Length: 198
Image (cartoon, rainbow, N blue to C red; front, side, top):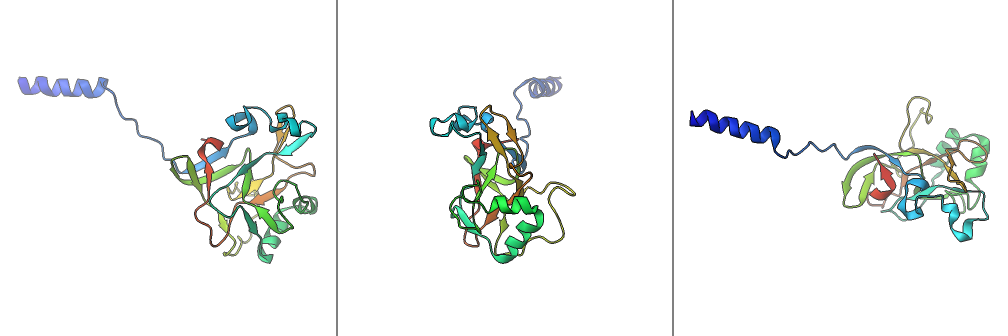
């Protein structure tokens, strides 16, 4: 009798007591937050900063850390970038201060992404969400164009934020695709977890 009572008490405590929920895996697709979702910008468009109020729109960039900050595309990666973009987008991505090319000249691009895109997180350590990347030491992918079959989290779409806090997942010349790229000597690249949402 005591044994049955003890088993019932244990079962009751297990059913009613605090439980540890299975935590969802931290790896997988995470979305890059828009300005209006980021404390860094006081949950409003970055265009509210006094020095930027005169502008109509700005690229909604988010820094990728862990590398040199820039990557110089070898010819085969320039060919790949051109293949996935329209001629107008190709010209836009080569303009200095366009958002992805800030410390040029082309083909020296920044290691960053844009609000609204998805990245593939491999693991999280503290505030660092480590992400999958292309590496320029490897050949570019063959035969697949972005968003023709399924989204590829290594190919990003340019996004622009406007004064009213709205945004578009394209440039003034239409869709433009960028890449999450690592240099051969870079360590694992990461994004601050505060800039991502599940």
